[in-house]
Image (tube, rainbow, N blue to C red; front, side):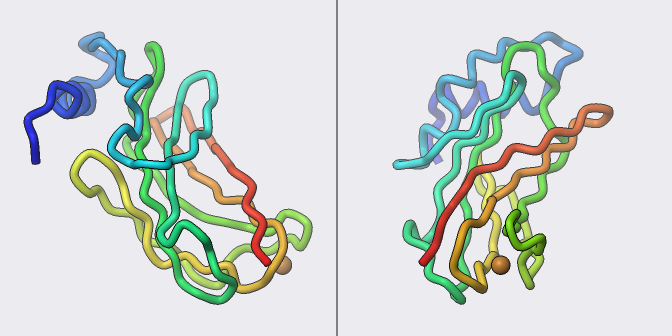
Length: 141
Ligand SMILES: [Cu+2]
């Protein structure tokens, strides 16, 4: 891994949290190492993600690589879960993805869209008292 200033800033931000008032200039660079990532933004958080493979096939497992960044004085989430559902059909996936930290981003493995249609890929951020759900719509044929 390189010792880029961005990585150091990222690690420092995670380590020091909100109490020390670390500079969170991070949001602009969120997911900079994930080429082609899409962004989901809320006032407090930003998720930059890409799927692997990029084109999701119905009935085949895929992964999601993502970076999670806090904006302003928002507290860095302690935990994040990834899930997906079909809002129109009122059901989720048949599999529960696992999330692990990989270098300065995360990777969720074991997702599968088992039917065609519109899915909502969701990220559940848990920053203690504050919980937030960020979602992105993905249609598969
Ligand atoms: Cu469905």
